[in-house]
Image (tube, rainbow, N blue to C red; front, side):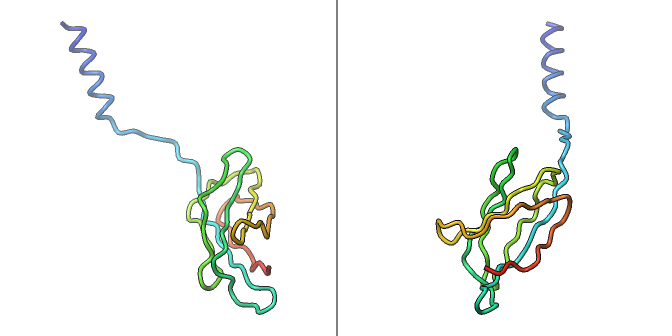
Length: 109
């Protein structure tokens, strides 16, 4: 009986205890894609960040001004790959380090 009470008390304390998780540092990453011919923003392109260990980020689309962004990308010492697609066609791929917040220079495609 005492053992059962102890198990129940332990289970309740574990269930009710606040969970503390070690959070990896994250940083925002953003940029803009410009049309190489007109210099205006290129809307409707899909961008991903791909990491060899973490995998592929959620996609983000360029807005009417060609701007794209992620708010919380894990900072890593290994490079990511920034990939930009027009439909299913890969039109840009470049290594990108994310040691902290990243604001890319305009990409002219």
